[in-house]
Length: 213
Length: 291
Image 1 (tube, rainbow over the protein chains, first blue to last red):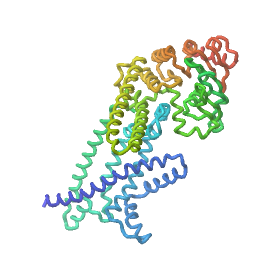
Image 2: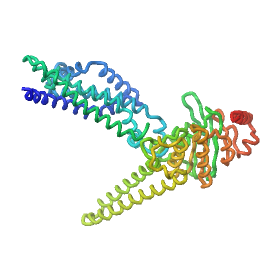
Image 3: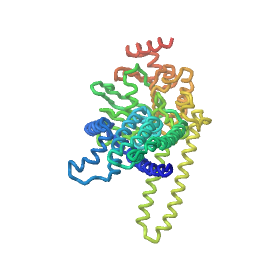
Image 4: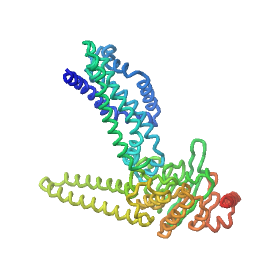
């Protein structure tokens, strides 16, 4: 019984991990693009991005999942997206906005002198960004990023709002049959996963300790 | 014609005109000291020379060739400005070393990037040559090209490493080659910054108050290095508050006040017998600060 349920929860946890991994995969680069947009010298782009980030950060992720899933069908009478795809799209947009603000803070914290030193040495803009600035930004944003990423692990449980079979949904379904303990047992899965992430981020921080910004 | 000729440089930030027509010239191997109170436009002038700011008006001639003309907007695109920058080196007040790289890598980075660009160019040329060659010869050509490219890369690497070692020797930091910037004192960091600027062999090396961010006991080592460069025939422009240094090291001195050159001449002329009342007042004040 215990192993049977553990296994079923593990299956749900697989879906959780899938949402987690897909979100990071797409939101990390998309966030960088958005951060460039929000720092653009081209004013219209800058304000469009800023308003977009405001809307996404200003509304609940649960609502956004519902909009992505039901929106196209209700408004344009298109078909429904695959549930898991809809969840990932909503998560990617949401997290890209949070990441973009972290990136922006990190990039803007690098002193102008670093850019100028690159410039007088004849470097191109992209050389300056990738060879000089980027690693310093990474070092600065590891702590806030680790916070966001850990939050993401637990936010995946919102996917059950459109009946995606992630771990919490699986556990919740057991309660209907009178089994309560699997619901609390899910904490173990989350804790182990977050524990591993904490170790990973700790390792990364240590790796970047060889220089000071 | 002088080595460097700057004519009528003007620069505005919004409504604030910081440079109101600056003209001067400099001979090869000379050291020019620029003095003046803060806010007068010294640093802006230096930044304009390095094209960190683009002057609104004026021309710059280097070695008989017009390098910059503010009215020729088409010739001042970003990539062209980048090439122009290579004629000048700049040592910053705040050093601005790259914290994530060792001393050695700080000095070699820009050279390596330039070498990489030259290498990629050569590679493209070879590829084009192979496409133009008859089919049966291509394989032999490919082997030949590969050999030459490997040789070029090897030579580039060795050249950069040797040059960097020599530069570190020159600024007295050969033993700090593998240190990171945070492990160095301010004076040492500034000497690395000087080596980094010299690595690209600029025609003219500029210093923006190179000792102002240093503790008083560390200024000596930096000034000594700059003095040493003078004897090796580098052309230099130094914005400085160190009047003694300007007096002893500079061949010519320019006093800038309110965006204009108020006085210029040899150190003996400017310090010994200033013609302008403003200059005299400035020199009196900076003397008072000393005591």
